[in-house]
Length: 407
Ligand SMILES: *Cc1c(COP(=O)(O)O)cnc(C)c1O
Image 1 (cartoon, rainbow, N blue to C red):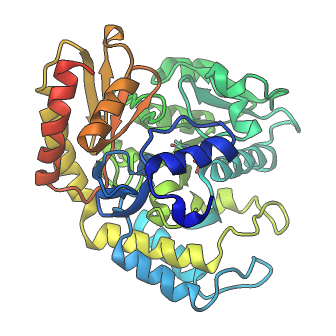
Image 2 (image 1 turned 180 degrees about the horizontal axis):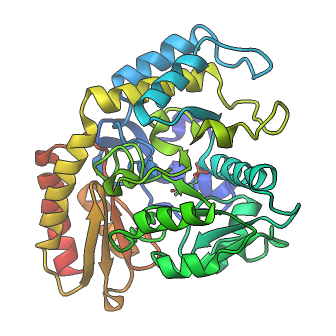
């Protein structure tokens, strides 16, 4: 088949089915182009994106300023490796550090790599600074976590499917119930180096811990000399209406993990942020990445941070999130168990008798709203932070009948 013969969505779906590994179950929408909150499929149909690539396009699709920064950098130099320096990494560091107040940054590419980096950093700190006996470091993590797909990260996944067939696993992790500060304190031993969590569990189904939990966790960690490691790969960079979700409780994690929207969806850029004291345990040769800190990623990420601030996207997320959440809660369908969220990270949990969230996502796609089920019964709504009230109203007009009438 010649490329020009492929014109319909089904042609592209068939190709994916024929050649691809079968490790995803996507909705059958074949996206051809996108701008802001809107995507267009190969048949010319437009959809309002309420997933934002799992919060990687907080700044909206194809943001013109980020795109221009990418084009300009592509024309100069894209990859130097860290064997040499480049003129984009320093300015990226400066922008990220100034914005966040964290003095030290370690750039990587994907979120999972940044989580791995944070684990290595916390362990090394435990051995070199806290004095934990070699090989004994423990990290406390939470039930319901999703922090990536590498062999070490799935070693502490509570999701049987994420682990099935992939052992042996990395030891050194201890699970506690999410949101339970007493369980955290009880789980700490002299060998505990870190408590690592998502401040709201995104993939877990938009699970929000009890108010005050993060603050108490921070206080417990400090008292026991345990590092608080906060994975804000999905919840950070404005998603929940503040720069970071930890800001809602005035908490500052010892190690902060960022990814996804750090590049506005243009390029994989992640980072681990920390203090001078903690980051200084890494010496040349301890850790690295060929692409981490590359000039293209650095230029893109710096601009992605700039537009987030300049265009007041975080304030918009707070205001629009409040409106969207309130309107969704008012739908009052017998099929809906709970509507919850913070900023523009919203979960609609359906009752078991609704028959699973997937069919509702498919019905919404028919109507022009793209979202994706998480776990069996939860629909996540997480549109780009640039969404307007009119666009939310447009989405609500399509969401209401689907949630009310069934699918
Ligand atoms: C998406 C996600 C990750 C993994 O990021 P990848 O870029 O897919 O490796 C880790 N932690 C959280 C909280 C995430 O949402």
